[in-house]
Length: 103
Image 1 (cartoon, one colour):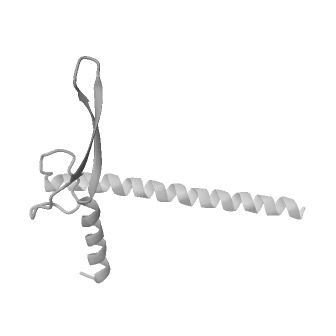
Image 2 (image 1 turned 90 degrees about the vertical axis):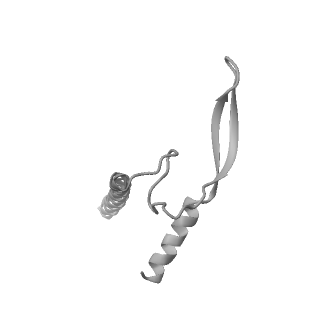
């Protein structure tokens, strides 16, 4: 692996297993809900999948990674297209503005 890939993977693992705040509502009595805040740090396990997101206590299956990565990649492409459209629209607006001044 290149040094850049190694650094990016190291950054991702540190981010994935960082200490984070989790908030949830706990039902104490009939109508009273108490908000509980906890700070949790996930433990690193040797068998963990690097790019798998753990949403519950079950270990994710390797075949489910494709769906998560495809969804994330699609969202990234959507953002890139929207940004490109914004830049093109801004350029067109500037172009019209310049042309109307020249008249």
